[in-house]
Image (cartoon, rainbow, N blue to C red; front, side, top):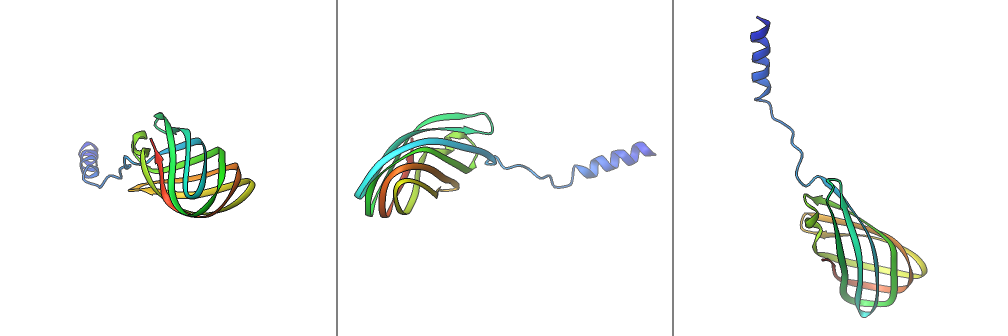
Length: 142
């Protein structure tokens, strides 16, 4: 009798909904350096490395470009980025929408959140330079 009860319980368990982990639930972290300037037009270039919780990693080039009422020169030497909505390290590549209000002199720190479809990127970093203004544009990972 116990065998039939166990078999029935096992059969019923297969009918219960199963909670699945989404493929996009890996975590990825980027370390980077970025430097640039702005006089109405903003441009910056740099390099970085992304490492994901599933063991994937990727070396990349970074660019930021845009425009607005912005002036300055900056260098980020210890940048960190955290991605969400990633299922493969290559999902981090592409153009992220960027809107920035900034002001700083000498040593400074910055943080911002960027999006590209379902992928989000939270950036933070410390660096040096001076800047003032508001700019809109793109943060590009290649």
